[in-house]
Length: 70
Length: 398
Ligand SMILES: Cc1cc2nc3c(=O)[nH]c(=O)nc-3n(C[C@H](O)[C@H](O)[C@H](O)COP(=O)(O)OP(=O)(O)OC[C@H]3O[C@@H](n4cnc5c(N)ncnc54)[C@H](O)[C@@H]3O)c2cc1C
Ligand code: SF4
Image (tube, rainbow over all chains, first blue to last red; front, side):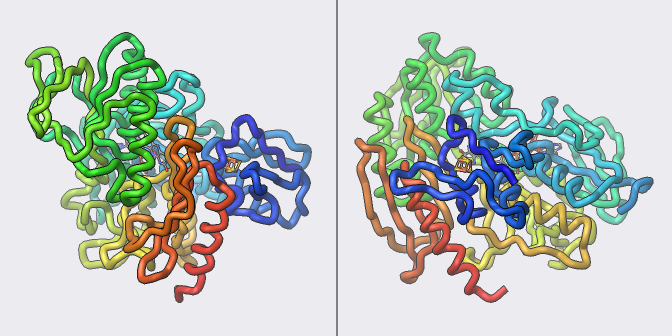
């Protein structure tokens, strides 16, 4: 699975971190970090995290294309 | 519910309604889906209205909520005025009647109006049309009076200052947001307003407006006269349940539902086939009192709509809605982010308070237990609080 966060759009709402903390996290400088290709079995949580993002900054897909259907 | 029957009707085409529709389709519902809204617009998101849209840093497309491809029959610009529970119909203004098999109540909340007559330049701010009108007038030399320094009033003042508008911000409490977030956070926000050149007046109310046909200003409770060409009343919002009067549902400043987002009847039992989500709902939570909670927050609408939609489709196995709430506000570049129920706290613990650096970190406790947290530009700490709250909530028996 491919995950992409548009960091220019991200406003540090943290909803993705709440939903899938193993995939999304904040570093010590409060910058969002994420793993761009998490294991497939994390898909449900990642999709949920993406649809919880208030600014729809997160894209999930096999190829990293297409926004989640919110 | 199968294709061919009356299908599902959603009343309210905003965030909760749109998310309910998306969830219904995602969970496999293929039947008829009709969405009614009093506003003429396709679903849009409200948070950008008082932020990017007013600040004129984004256009309206930033507020659109995706609704294409969901197979919805739109009934826009029409108000639901009556619900017949045994007859399974919603009556619209004009008299049309929509039958339903399942109903999602997502009518949100309405801004509390100014209690009295007022000149035409005094308005409220909730809709895209409100945002268009105000955006158009900001920056043109008009002086703005904002009544109420809560989340909405604060954001309006900030956006207006950003456009060069002179702003009077009048608040009855000793600090902005005091009842929601306490005095320290309130003072932090007050400092941001003042540093930006907003004329913030606390412990003060607007007594009356001056100017009969055109607003010229207002007289405040301390006798001061302020000049203004425009005024926005930002005194909170109330759940929109008027159309449900007499329907046999339990109304208590909100439509009361159970932990499965099912509407309750006046007898206290869930009414089959009717679910609730968003600002309009009053719902139970282990950390709320016996009356439950009403929250006017984005994330709440999203998460409750998901549960409501699921439970409408699969009433035999209802999912439970028991969130750690979260909400946010953006003021002068400071990202205020909160989790839990700060308003329920009896003590606050201030870990960082730096208005100049835009940084804030406050923990809220009740009987020594963490019940909420607020941060400014500290999302990492917020995530840690959120995890603690989720863990504590997990320890409360279902
Ligand atoms: C300007 C603004 C900024 C905000 N900023 C933030 C923020 O930064 N962070 C945050 O967490 N939350 C914010 N919120 C709150 C958030 O937008 C709301 O919690 C959210 O909109 C709730 O969604 P809802 O669908 O429950 O209700 P609403 O958005 O109120 O939608 C209800 C819909 O129902 C329709 N309706 C009502 N009655 C009827 C009827 N009888 N018949 C037909 N249609 C009807 C209305 O026209 C409306 O479109 C903000 C709200 C506003 C207004
Ligand atoms: S939820 Fe969205 S805005 Fe928030 S941190 Fe994650 S990507 Fe950024």
